[in-house]
Image (cartoon, rainbow, N blue to C red):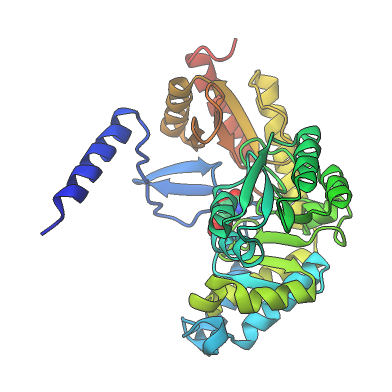
Length: 397
Ligand SMILES: Cc1ncc(COP(=O)(O)O)c(C=O)c1O
């Protein structure tokens, strides 16, 4: 018998979400998550995946995954510290460290897990964290879990960060201070002002933590935002995901050997959750190998990003201030944004509407994620659908 309290809680809250149009219905894919996808039998141009380089469907990764599953089986069998560490995990961590130009690295089961793990292994209730107000949910949850004081600074506002860092330092209330930022902000495609953030960190002795989920594989010729700015020896924690440009699943911290040694004995998802599967790990190693040996996919991604941006701008859409291939198409009104995304879908483009509370009220947008796997024909077709729907809805002249 189910609890009446639970039933009441769920009905009330589900009804509330549905009445506000905030209940997210999930459309399962009937195809791989490539540049074209199939949903409910309908073929669509996919502009909503984080598979930036097209590696999620790359045959070289698939072959590596199959070979690893045949050699090691489908599961790691235990947590890393019992006997779930296969030689493949060690190779992956060495590979990440060489990719990121750090002394060492540690891999986790997801990027989300990684932020929960790393922040709480180092920070505690006597500490404070300066966190960009637009940081990802996993950073926010990792900060909360650590029980440190969270001090939010205005998005990419270095004066605000400096002022708050100064106050925190001079208050004498905290043992350790850390500044955390995304490397690339996924809703607008803007890049964190890392050189200035590092300067403030040096001034007030802050640890530096950069979550480069959307910058790895994309900036710094693939090595990420920290490399893009030449700051590999200035950032303490370089976080990344293996699920976006790398195309598989997992997350990691790259940094100094001592930091990684500490995370291996103190970060709870490493100690208490089963290791990444052999197939995932082998595919990740192959992906990083590809990125280290060629910039072809990276260059294609940027070329496609520029092409889509120019096309949308020429049509008259507001594409914001993105500095990366992420291309928002800002509509404003929430309902109109939802309607726009729905019409794009009907015409053959899958581009999700992103509205409040994920972004500020009145800045609803359809977010486009071009990838290296899109062809010019696909992008041209998407642009002509944008034009048709934009005109039909009175969004374009
Ligand atoms: C900045 C940031 N960090 C972490 C994550 C979580 O990564 P994963 O999907 O690998 O768990 C995401 C994913 O959306 C992200 O955007």
